[in-house]
Image (cartoon, rainbow, N blue to C red; front, side, top):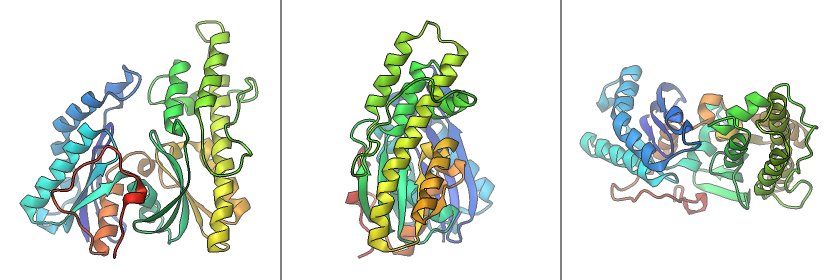
Length: 344
């Protein structure tokens, strides 16, 4: 089983070739981060135009790196949502065209499912497992029981954690993307200097909220002398990162209790999505996993941020079950995991 995956949901243009033995033959990626940095965030039209310009080249590069003929592919998988619809349309249309031209099955991939299943590509994690999905647009705790079998235990009530990182970095003048900028600035910073609130800490349930934390950081920054000193930036970044990590860990601990009650002792806690690349957050979640008696899996950083290997892997997983999609399936800017289907 060899699948070509295409990813264009945001500002990464990517193509990859993955097989059923979890081997990544090729994983080609073009980042638009520099193009969007001057705007302080992703501009949808700019992203869509960039996908149009470079996607064909990324696909050719992936196939050349894999060193296989087009006829060797067993399926084409492309992100069909959720995401910025202009970019999603570029990737989905290209994937459909290749499917039609090659006579290969097409798999319309849900970008969230791809993140959730990445740990099965990187670490062969068995079902069921608990997944914390944290990215620029999503923050959810999910019970993963099988392909298309997902139960959401908690979600954000406002901002996603990745979005909060981007906004915090902008407030501190650290640039875009915010997650890596905050993590770098926090090194050597004093997380106790500024008293920021840890949202939802200790409350029942598994939902998240980050808008209040963002507002609290803005109020702190407004009281500091302008321009901010390096020490101010480092301490504020450390305080913000610490609060996000504590909040994510607290909510995940509640979800781990629910997971263990439903499935018994053992199992795995997986963290996925771009924010999963943050070392402080990984460390906090690993402690939660150890206390709950769960294995902890964080995929390699390159597979946490948006990439096409995870898209191809969903293609592998779904084709194993005999699943594919019609070429008239419509790309979607919003596509909840709850609307996915597995094998009958």
